[in-house]
Each structure stands twice: as structure tokens, then as C-alpha cells.
Image (tube, rainbow, N blue to C red; front, side, top):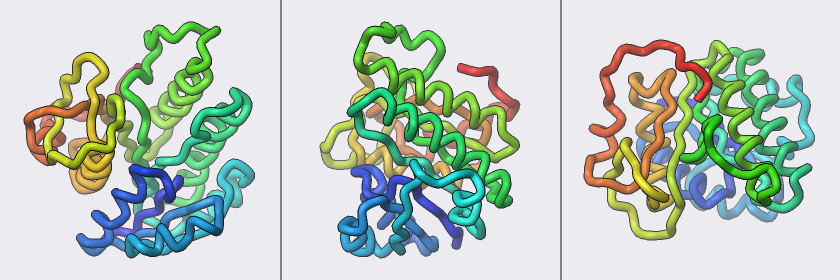
Length: 224
């Protein structure tokens, strides 16, 4: 049993992840900003915790994450103003990483996006640029921490039924069901070979556990 804290606990992926973790015996706490979302989270079997990560400083976040074995970042501003996108997807995410280090939480899984790399090609005038820029900054900060980190970078998210299969050599928009993304997160928390890796993936033909069990030597990656 692992003690896992999910930040962004009412997101579509998080709500699919929570029962997977609970059903295998993990102790799951899901952080939500809106108290009205507590029943949805508790319906998955997870424990809901109301907190606004956008407003918490590193010290307060350290108290929130303390005592857990792993943190999963699945939060996001969900579009809207560039200012809030940076405040949540970059600044709050980075504070949560620093808080995990401060609190002695060893493991951190970041749910990112497939295009999070320095050559993402998003024009600065594009409305999507703040998200791309914020996620890249957060991912790069995570790679520079001493945490046992994994960056998961799925392609376009769909509401299709789960297939249990992915590819880690994605092409095009690499569409993948949210349910399969949830399964990838769950498996990555078990799979030691995911530590220190950025894993870009989409829907495919390889069972998730096999796709993630990459036995290449582990070493710190340069900023993607």
C-alpha cells in the first residue's frame, strides 16, 4: 500500500485514476479546490481534501503533501487567462515540487502534454502559448529536483473507452483515452523504470505495463 496525494483531484483523468489506486489498496487523498466536488471524489473511494493550491505557499503545500509516498500533479487552470495559466500550471506546480522536497516526499509524477519540449513550435501570439510555456517550465523544474520524478506526456485526450494499450513512439496528435492515461499514471507509480524519464505516449497496441517497463539505463535527462 502506498500513500498517494493527487493534486487536481476532480479532473477527468484524476477521477478515473482514483478508483484504480483505491482498488489496488493504496491510500489515496485527492485535493480539490471546490467543496462541491468532495462527493464526486469520495465516490471513487478516495479521501477528499479541500485546498486551493494556487493560493498556498511552499510551507503550506509542504504540510499538505507531508506523510505521503508520492504526489501526482494532475491540476491545471483549464484555459482562461494567461495569468491564471501561469499561476497554476507553472507557479503552483513548481511550489508543489519544492514542497515535496521540503516534506521528504520521495516520488513525484507530473501529468504534462505530448508537446512539452523546447521545440514545441507554439507561436507566442497563439492563445495556447501560455499553457505550453508554463508546462515546459514546470517540467524542467521537476527534472532539476532530487525527487524520483516521472513526466508523463500524453497526446490528445479523448473520452473513448479504455484499451489498456499505448505506444511510447507516438505520431500525429497521438489521441489516447483519458482512462488509459489514468492507467499509465497508476502503473508508473509501480514501475521503477519510469523514474527519471519523460514518457510521451498515445493510443497504441502495446499493453501499458509492457510499454512502461523500459529497461534502458537511468540517468538524468537534459531539458527536453
